[in-house]
Length: 470
Image 1 (cartoon, one colour):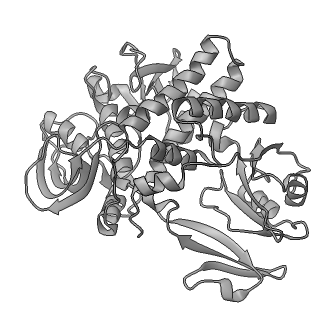
Image 2 (image 1 turned 30 degrees about the horizontal axis):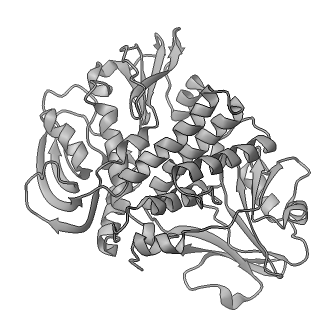
């Protein structure tokens, strides 16, 4: 890996020319040929509305449609089909990226003009909070990383960890906690939902930086940042939700064991171990990956919160259309969330196409030939390698899981009866009765977002839950 430092990267990415953006409504008549014919001079096209073709097969058919003369695909990112990234190149040198506007604003009923105005508002807020060259780039993840580079204090450098340590973190850390709790009841007396205000933004302070030290010293390092491989035994008298994540055999599904007496081995962040120790769990440390306490994201945290506050202040002051400024604030939030995910630096799959069979690399999958062109999928390294810091993304996700359990304000699942806890979802908590937690208004504070004061069917799936709280 190129372990370039952010100081070097900051110089490289300091200025960006203004993007020519097009916002196009998705209609049944819209096909790729029409899209590129009318908007091929834009740098980036945002599709406003549902994904073309609606379902997966329909989208595949839409994507396989003919292209105008001179255009060819230039490597599509299709790992997340609900928000694909499409790239096209023209033989005259033009390049166009196609995204769904939902990547910035989420799903919703907004017009192309609103989406365009919202990104323009975001541009203004970014320049005010960062510098005159800051602006929304093609995606929230790219924008968020660029803004982080702009926030690095003069003289500070944060080299990437070794490939070995990066892979260790990626292979032993999960993201947000998604868990349904069934208590045998067919119906619930009601449902109350809380979530954290701008939750991930509250978790960015004082993160660890390299170099990392990997050892087998069986001691908890307390406030020093790091991750631990531990053998855990759930206390015999435990009668609540699980505290530590455990990767199931498939390596992708995470559970939170809570059966009294169960012993398991897992990796956990120091913030999660702090909760386990506080509640009397038996934890034996087997390995440690310790970092140096630092502040790599503190300035970025302050400025990203300021961006969102500026946009919401415009709403309160009547200086901007409420719906448009709210979309812009949602986009600012998405920049932070997506950048945290991008710091993880996982390799990604890209679909490419060429008439030249020699362009297909060894190890490519899904190789196909049709319409005089070869298509295949290959795995590529994360973009912007100098911003790959899985130690930060893993810590942010772990802190969020820990705060979902408990906090200094005595909020979280461990502060209500177990039978009251129905679901835990990323930074959200769903309960059968309202504990009456006060909303302090601060970033990261629990706030009540859902109140259903009538009997409802107990959700059995995540889809059931989302339908209830929609």
